[in-house]
Each structure stands twice: as structure tokens, then as C-alpha cells.
Image (cartoon, rainbow, N blue to C red; front, side, top):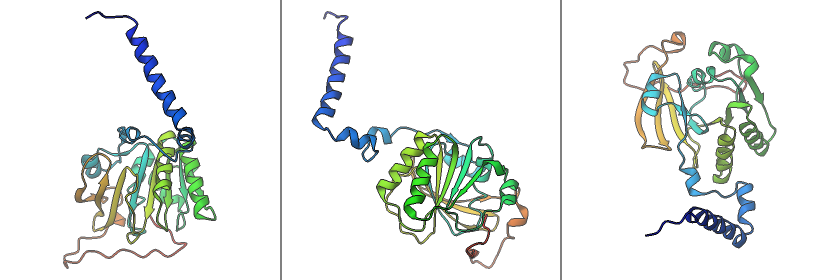
Length: 252
């Protein structure tokens, strides 16, 4: 066998030829890619860097939260869903954007969680479409470490994919909050958590994750950080009921 120094350049030429043929034979494909309406399967398989959540129980099982991606959190309001995120947000240097929160955002509570007031931006768009647009822009702007969007209706697959791509482009994390009763399809998200109240913190069910199987429910213990907000153990055999948060009230 004779080795030719021309082979590497010939191979590169062949690869370029294949890529050019793909675009020329599919003139609309590149436009669709640029508009992020289609994507390659291999792009979705790239591993994502994780960041510490600040909770040993969660980090031990998940290795942290996605550093750039979409996290779906189904939860009743006001059971500690925001407290679950504060230790991670405390480490961030860029903005945290809150979009369409259904309750008043108490700055004092966020300060107590370690999130500075100057790093908070609250948006109230007047429509679902405007909220999705604002979320996408904040994610890919490069100015935000985290964005939180509260959903009231089902998210379409293409909408979720656009948000996921925007999060990766801006190296930011999107937390989608949804009520437990909301029927969600199989969306392109990186992590799906279902929360419920627990006597000493929050019960977490990992329903879906990008790399790995679902996990058995576990409890994130919050008594060390917020002893006054946790409840004593109930021995009646019944799970504690979910608190009801009225519109305009503050929930953490």
C-alpha cells in the first residue's frame, strides 16, 4: 500500500462536496436551519455541562442542574419551588429574568436567598406569544444566567425546541414552571421535575432527564437554610396538602 500526501486534502474536498450537495439539493433546508425550525439529531446528543444546585440530595442524584438548557418544573405554587433554585442562582454573575410570574415577587425574599436585587428583571408581557418571544430573546442575549417562565397552557414542541436552542446559544438555563394538572407532551427538554410539599422541604420526582433514567422520588431537606418555613413531621399517615396561593400574593 502506498500512502499519498494528497489523500487528506482529497478527503477534505470530498466532505465539502457532500455538504455543498446537501444545500444545493435542499435549497430550503439551510433557511430552515437558520430559522431553527429543523435541527440535526447529532446536535441534540451533545452532553451539557452541569452546575451545582446547592442541595446535596439533588446534586448526588443528578450531578447538578443543566448549565445551559431547559428544565420543566411541575409544582403547586408556594411550596418552595423558588427556594430550590436560589442556591444555584446565588452563584451567578449575570441576570435572572422572571417572565409572567403569577404572584408578586418579594425582593426581600430573593435577597434572603442570596440573589441581589440588581440581578433581577421581572417582565409581564401581555400575551403568551409575547412571553415566549421575550423568553427566547433573554436566553440567547448572553446577558442572563437564568430565565423563569410560568406556563398556563401547553407548550408546542417547536416552541420548546426554539427555547432550548436559545438557552444553549446564550449559555443560560430556562426554568419552565407548570401546574401539576397541565398535560405536557414529550417535549425537547433537558430535565423534568415534579415537586410536591414535604414536611422538611420539597419532595422531588425526576420524571425525565436527558442523560439517564427517571429516578425514584426523594426529599430535598431545607430545614438548615429555612427552619421557619418548614413544617414539623406529621404522623397522621396523610401527606401534607398543597398550599393555595392567591393571585397577587407572594410565593417562594
